[in-house]
Image 1 (cartoon, each protein chain N blue to C red):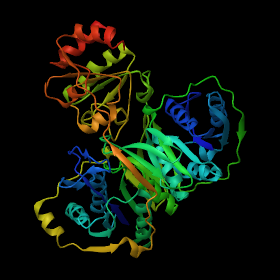
Image 2: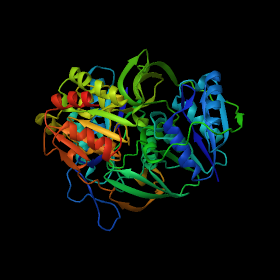
Image 3: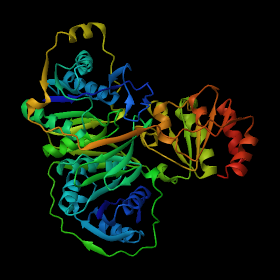
Image 4: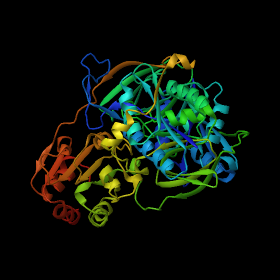
Length: 311
Length: 249
């Protein structure tokens, strides 16, 4: 079996979520990695993908129409390359979730999103109901279209391989969709999905000002990413891409510090696979305490600065 | 401009479901059912577009069992003009839903289909993208803002690390993320009025669509549970535990 993995790169490296997808794909067969972008970007991306151990071949698609990972041309490209591959795979990232279902529809396949475990070539485990149940599903489609939940597979290393790179002809066109602009503020912090430590804030912070004032120094001390509950995002304390939970990011860091987060099931769905969970909350009955390894019940406005100072 | 708004009846988002003891699925009998929260957002956005004069008609559609008509009544009470119920099995797969919706699009000729980005029961996050693929239409997924600009649709999308804006030709597919708007509550007079709005009922088979499932559920299990840990008394104790017991700092 040969498997095609659509790979995302950033700053000359394969994104960690894509390296988790590669790790999952190696359980199924020989892995070919597809990178796409404008010509310059595809050169850099293919060099990065070639270095990931486990990748047997890199397919490089370089053309202006592929510059912004728009779903319309990208799905046409993947379908054009689908050929004899048994599985078409991407990370469950914003791009993967946007593109892969469209690919599946074009191939008359029911996709299997958010794969957490691979049982065999046809059978996969995925979460449903915000992770409150795990469904084992068997696909009867000849070709499988999967997205991989990054937190469930240890990523392949970024370096160590030397796969050959093959340029592919790009004939796809797109006249329906146009990239206008992107707003992705630069940050020195690690990405949420690949961070070793996450400091996450909720309603208890009470304001955007407090959210920054109390969480950032703690995150700085720990080299942590900053996460947020849905309430904190809805209230404007934190940007949307910080949201951890069923409808936001799914994370599994070594250490997750939940500050002023009560622990709604939708939030727990996004972080309960963390190795160690710390809860700081004034409510001794908050559901977050039911999943936390260590909890401090009290005033976060006193506890957080004290913790920051003690580290 | 006509807008088609598919809505799904799901277990209410406040309810924590339990896995059936025989491992065949989750227990949904007797649970409170509601409109999928993302679909409330799309109904709201579609109704706002009509209120602004940008849309002429908002058609709500639901695919599922007879009781899905309650969900459609909610959409009508929020301001949708009419509703279509397509009777099928409970919670058909996104591929089947997308095929049924494609058949409805060919009949109703909307210029915009507005879907929630995911349903909170199967968490698939697929139907909108699949419908776009089947129709060959552009897609603006995970939308946090939607604007008509010179006959095109500008969609701000939630992406990893921020947002991006894409411009789409019409007709188009949009899927809504949480920040798009805050859905209104249906007022009592509007709930009464909704009872008189037209609702058509179709059978999935009448649309000539093959809805055979491609995924078989082998089993459903509870996720591993975490044990509640220890309540500590001081920051010093926490730092000591993280350093020496958990060894994570």
